[in-house]
Image 1 (tube, rainbow, N blue to C red):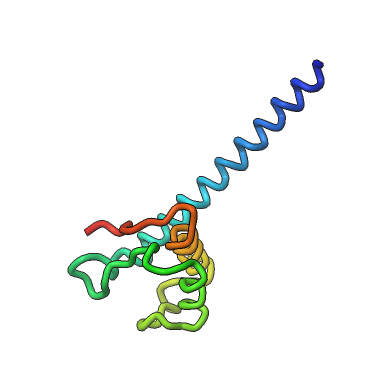
Image 2: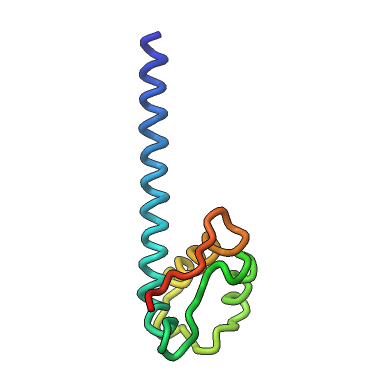
Length: 106
């Protein structure tokens, strides 16, 4: 019995650590999205607001893979940042478990 309690506690700690790391990654993806996309994609700015739930996750992924963005982002968004932006869009796309309709402040 004593060992089972230790395993339950250890399992709970591992799950908590995993949850926190996923939460931190999601927050980092949101921060990158707001930082790199928010300046142009808000009401009254150069580009229309971006709503992750406007498209399915695969559509967002293909959009960037096929270089559909009308502005060349290579000078302002590095590969790691672009991966975070895509992850954010996919994780909050229309077909995700947590779709987001509007994220960039007006």
